[in-house]
Image (cartoon, rainbow, N blue to C red):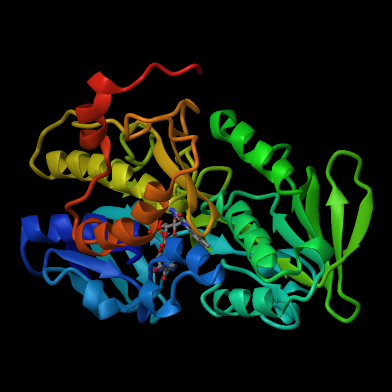
Length: 415
Ligand code: FAD
């Protein structure tokens, strides 16, 4: 059985942004990344893939190509944590020991949470951008759609990129206009939430846009069943528990999600099942040599790759300080996250805010609630390059420096 100075669980953006910096610092054979998958996905691109604006191939790289060269890649799954003994157990039965552990295993998609969904997915107008296979069907189904009911759902669970379900709604609505079927189409957005977007500063603008585009928004509607044989989707109204079925000709499902089972069942989890870390320092609340970031953590901000940019910078400072024997925490995370609200092929509202305070944390000295073509270009063409070349290599820790440069010229906000 092996032992490393630092063991990182997961080779997504969270795990790689941390392991690349730490392995460069400590040198070879000191850092291991435990990651079972052969492919690394840049999931934020999947909204564009589903909307027919990007090729799926641009969202994938072989895992071997993105692994830090100084880190040891253990291609296996972690099945158990033993933080009392500083080890993790792998699916092949081996254990791996560590001085420090960083957990970044993402969120688990619970396809079984909606009856009939697993069987229906990817066929006959039923799709989801939340899956590597089915995202490749979304645009095909949009193109084949000839009118009728187009349904879009938002689950009653935590989810990654809570903006993604609305983004595909807007892109599909526009596509139906462009293909000439819009006037015989009902675009219906059924969300389990009580509003269209959690942060009102942007949510008000988004709701107004939905009204203008005749998108029918129903709140407290949780998808519980898909009956593919008769094209019915059943929703439970969480306000009065009533069930209501909608006939669909196209349906995009944002599936229920939750903590990965092996985390939820471990000593690292809090009551919600996510890794229990301090929201300022990203250090585990009980085991001081354990850190977590990204979608598997219980950080009370929205789960995005954008949040990971800020989280990784803070985590690395605190971890490196600890390795170097400094006793005080070096950095504090402000909850920064971003939700690039794509509302058309050339239209984007760049929501940037702290998930901790709900207050905007915008990079640019303009009102970012305004629909912008430049922001769309930034998100579609520039940010993917930053992701691959800088975030995964550990050298991009978010836009806070750019923001502070613009601070002196930033107009005062009205809320
Ligand atoms: P992940 O990227 O999920 O990586 C986790 C890794 O852990 C995976 O490689 C997995 O194989 C590995 N793993 C799992 N289980 C184990 C195990 N037992 N042992 C070892 N390894 C394991 N974010 C944005 O910032 N902007 C956007 O516009 C945006 N849009 C999105 C649109 C869609 C459709 C989706 C699906 C996501 C979007 N996101 C967006 C969210 C973003 O992709 C995630 O927040 C981000 O990928 C989280 O990174 P992570 O490293 O925490 O987890």
